[in-house]
Length: 332
Picture 1 (tube, helix red, strand yellow):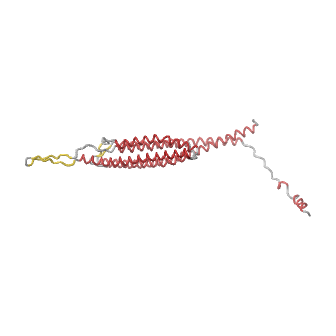
Picture 2: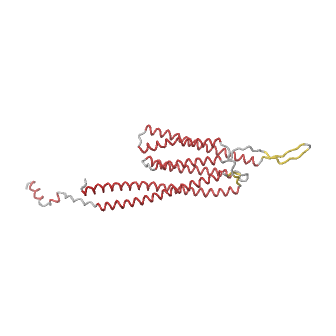
Picture 3: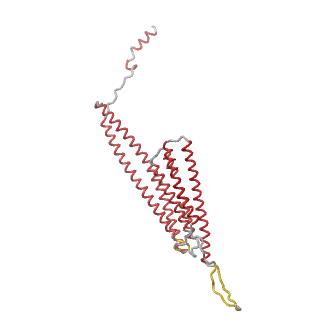
């Protein structure tokens, strides 16, 4: 049997359907089911919008509470000064508060870097959040300067006070000692000078960082290939640097040349201990509130992105539905 006859013989036993793929008919378009899916997705979106609004309100409430508490603590401390019995206790509490404010700036700066990366990679909504963090950081700088200036500086106080005197052999001999008031003023002056130097150093370093950022941004805008989101971010930041610099320079001048700080209410040693306990509790509350604020913000950012995806999905479903409904009805 020839090869051709063998092939023909075998072909007789193989069904034609095994050689030719049968195309299954396309399922009928279930437009009603698609319409229902659109309605369900719209309900889902409404739910997520409400949740996002809840997180937004939580963020505002936490931020307001944090700012109110910090402002009240700073106002309380700036209205106090040491007495001869408290020596430098109140000043030490002010310095501790300044360190807490500096730590707060570091936390906000870290969060700012995270948000800046979101903006750089295309999250336009986060650009406004970046500006709010900048405002909080500048506010902390103002509060540090305010506390620094509230520490009493040098005052003209008589160094010696008379304890009376007596006559001896026709001469009057006066007994005098270094006055407690002069000693207290001396303690205040030493602490004030040190803190003003420390605060001035912080402000100068901040100005140097701003200047470095300006040079970097100009280089990126002029010489680098960047995305539209990056260009918008860098242009916005570059425009803000001048205002930030002027603000810091003004505070630096005030801290360097201003005098005063001695007009507050003098506090005794026991009162100073009570205020220390109050500040410790407040510091703990603020740490917890800031952590909760950042956690809620992270939830808000994720929720905002998820909601945007849902809305994009809804738009695609509506477009598909409109197109296929027109084709089924035969509309041109």
